[in-house]
Image (cartoon, rainbow, N blue to C red; front, top):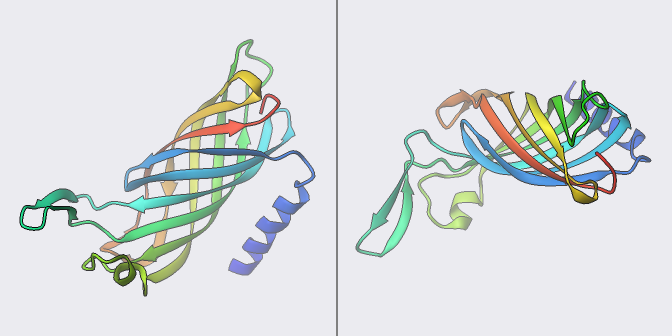
Length: 196
């Protein structure tokens, strides 16, 4: 089943590849951590945009605190998680009021779903090679539903802030949790020569 979904997502992206892809980048902040987004999108209809989104999502512990070792002069995080995720989502964005609002903004609803690679390092190690050298990996799936607004900028680029809920089940316990569900705030800066 996993292979079928991956092949379908890849085939979908290749089939719309003849349209001009617009690239985007931006920060994201979630209930469980923060990260950076990279995206590509194609406008297939005036009110429908499809594409993909990948990101680096650094998971933080609820009780993580910055600390300072006065003997060595180093700062470190106490109680941090050595866990990050790399979601690769296929996205569909619907602009219900496209062409009906006489201004430079357009509200949208989007759904994102796809596989996620979770990399779980060793929290006790401070050296990079020891922490991530033999890190465990988990492949799972996730989904995000978001609402936002696209603001048209000079030159056809857009700024798209959105807020949504993300469902990230792990399928097993990873660093004390079976899931990393929560609210997500994204701000995506998309570059292009036309409206979206």
